[in-house]
Length: 192
Image (cartoon, rainbow, N blue to C red; front, top):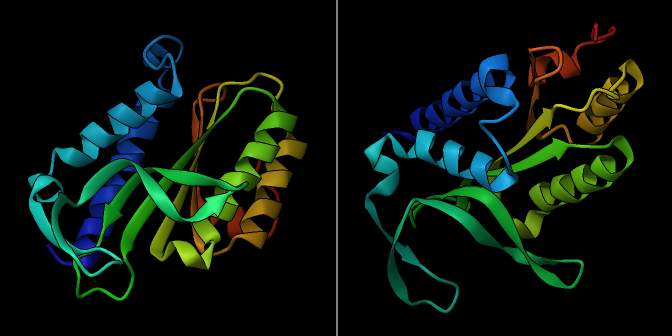
């Protein structure tokens, strides 16, 4: 698969996951934790065996290792708040690629607005940090919080303006709705 085909596959897996999250049949009980969400999304991506094939990779020290292309909890290159950070899900590039990481995904589950804004900013900072050497950053925002308002949606648009190189996916289990990256960048209001 070419890189763009891999990206298309990752994005379609994110959308497939999102449809399950916003479906009332599944949203309240199917995903009990962020760990469940990561595992489910990982399994959707891993359906394509190319993500699980051995990949020769040269680490910073120059040693060659064999690894998988798809990882969960892959360490970041840059420390986060003085601690090593980790990407929720990451797809690494082969050695000849310009960037080490083809795609990294962070998931934010909104359980209360103020705390979630802080976590969202931290995750966006991680994805946008140039030291983390990634080509495509994705933020998946999951909402099942009934107190989420139009103002909160406007704040998401501001985050998108400030982090315009990261692709946003918003899945809202309360309104059973998907809001894509392109909707956040349009002028005008998102009807929420």
